[in-house]
Image (cartoon, rainbow, N blue to C red):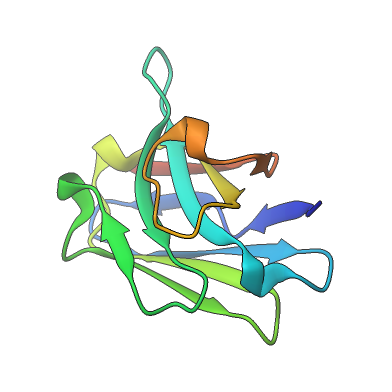
Length: 124
């Protein structure tokens, strides 16, 4: 089992940047694929980025390609989401999640463990 704690959310103007961090407990962090999801009011939770166990393979939803970067540091049990050129439509609660699947799974049901979420608000 793994526990996840996100940090780094906040209020930023359009065009600005934020870096989200997700710290994982336990000694088996490198055995989990990791994902960042977001959920805006009235919308489904969507996977915006995911990374495999080694960090060698990544996935991005089309709307964030070229603006967001997911990375992980297995020595620090942490996964990051660097968000640049933020837009008002990026406003949502962002969740970190851990998957036991070997391949990247960019869907909600592929993740067994979730953080509590962190709010990102982008003003226009």
